[in-house]
Length: 97
Image 1 (cartoon, rainbow, N blue to C red):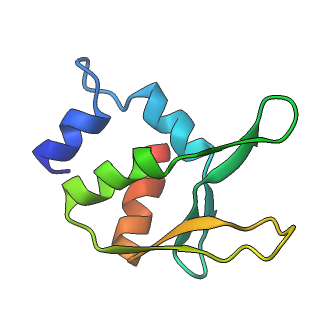
Image 2: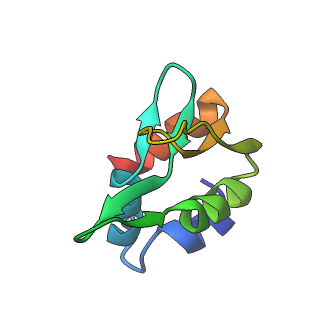
């Protein structure tokens, strides 16, 4: 893990931040296509939140290349995603554990 990433992800005690873990738990990981879906529903009603602002700095700090897309048909369950390399995908999965 690069120093820039450690500043974002690791707490003063040297552990992965609970905020980062919760953010990754709210994402959906598509193993076959190396896509990370960042939208999720929270609260009551139809309020949506996105984790784009949280994942983007981690990917950039590590130097991983990615593409951003949206493959949601109207009324579908998919949506905003990051398409990343297998290395970046595994890095984010390992942060989650």
